[in-house]
Length: 154
Image (cartoon, rainbow, N blue to C red; front, side, top):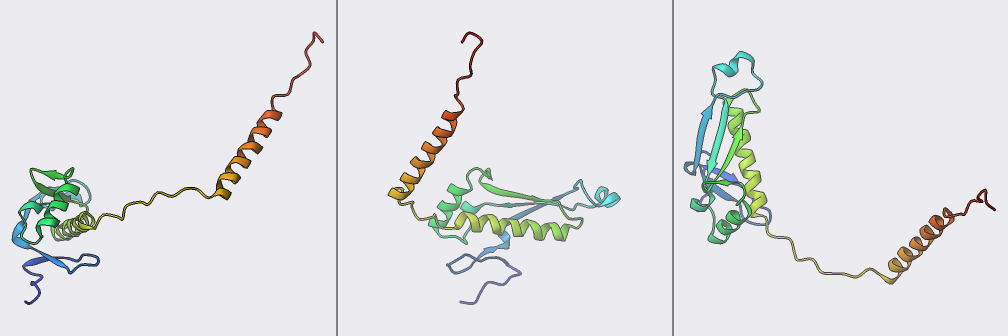
């Protein structure tokens, strides 16, 4: 099978796995006027980009990947869709590129496999002894500050 065309698919490279490709038909775009840099141009151009992507409905992912995306992106999903806004550039095209880049980064982060479980370890005997010795030195130093001053009665 040939690789999907970049004009019809958004490439999603994954670390240690074969790259995925999201069909561009699954991305929903919305454009509106943005505030920020651009001078009078911002009053006339729909340069702000809103990109919506519903990972649960995507055919690009396996059921396991879909479940992982739903779980890890749960706090960012709005009505089941990941919404990304970009308005940092003056041109709509650059904002579209920025939104696509951020979408890919967030999906890569969410699809990353979980870290291996932590194996509990104990401090070494030397580390425990050094910690206790340091506590004794500190205690002795503070104990020296408790000196009794002669009073007028004596």
